Amino acid sequence: MAERTTTGQAPDRTATGITTEPPARPQPIGAFPLPAGFLLVPAGPETEPARRDLVAGKLPHTWPEALRAHELAFAGDTDGALAHLAGDDPVTRYNRFVIDPDADDPAALRQALGEPYGVLADVVAFTVGRAPEPPALGDADGEVAALVLAAQASHALGRGEPARAAELLEEAAGRVPQEAAPLAGVLLGSAATIRKDTEGATPEVIAALERALGLVDGTDLRVGRAELHLALGLALHDRAAEDVGAAGRAVPHYHAALQLVTSAEAPQVWAAAHANLGAAYLTMPMRQASDRLRVAVAMRSLRAALTVYTRETHPAEWASTQLNLANALVYAPSSHQADNLVEAVELYEEVLAVRDREADPLGRARVLANQGNALAHLGMFEPAAEKLAEAEALFTEAGDAEAARTVRDLLDGVTRQAAVAKAGG
Image (cartoon, rainbow, N blue to C red; front, top):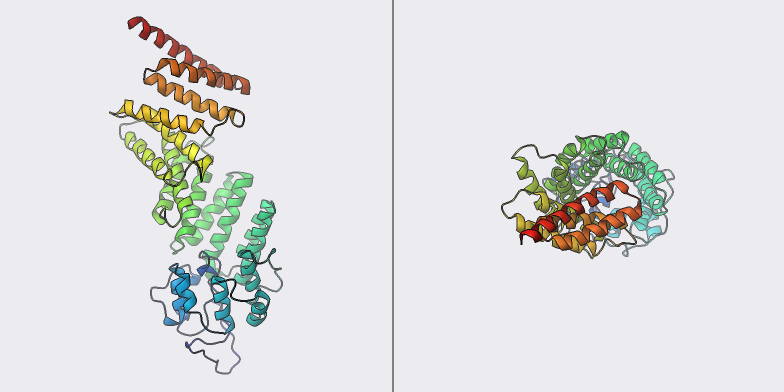
């Protein structure tokens, strides 16, 4: 652990008992979510145990009175935190600025903080939108340098330079002191997630995500850990086409994400974990009777995701999840199969409203083919034939001859069933 430097004189103390000497390093900045994750822990013997806990990614079991503002900020009570940040010393001014960016001038705050923390005023100003660009690295080192580089990575990503952003985040992780390993894990995870989106789910990306998870394992960074589990699950899931066991290895990571967060605190992570857990379960082969339970779990997860994903707020995710749920209803063993088929037909119809013939002909064709199949199972042969005929035409126009032949065979079967039903009637 880095040692504090002193002048050899007794440090001054504020009215709260906190010394006005520079805060000890490393500081617990960057790992926990904003705004609490950017707060500096002021120097003082009563704050030192909490600083060590936070640097290690742990929330203190007991908060000292001197860190009452931090305790409230970590609990989400920013108004209460501000009420406890009334001092005029540079660290208190900076912490007040983190929570209320209009409370101070970044340039004046930078000068008041001095080295090595002054640049953090510019990092915060950029992060909250008060500055158009992040600061230069300058002489910053350690965790402070890591935050500057992370801000530069965010700026690069905003400029459409994901490869540069990933490089900066990896460099940032390399600047983090060993005792602040959770911060390095968060930065490495962000870099790997960007690389996954640009390079694909390569073995190197998966290894990077696994390393990042190892660095945050056992910490109180619940949302960050959930995000990493989700990213690793998605990366493994993406390899399912070339690795038959990859979807199965993704499942524990989706479950882990769901055990760490709720829909209220991290709705996007929670919904994505549920949606992809359901999709993973549905792609696994059914070999025994107990596999029916897995399908039921998949359907529950898909329905849960749809409490967050709506057509208005998340149209693409909503349509994909709706489609998976409809497919599950068609093929899931059930004593209420007819009811499931009716619900599936209705879900397919809702998806068709957003799968435009011009914008996504293949997507629309797949929905029509599935809906036609469900209608045929219900004995509604005429509307089934209409849906299948449109699907075949779209596949043919798009040049997917194999899919067109498959639908043609299904359509021929429906036509024969309709003829038999008519003759019998």
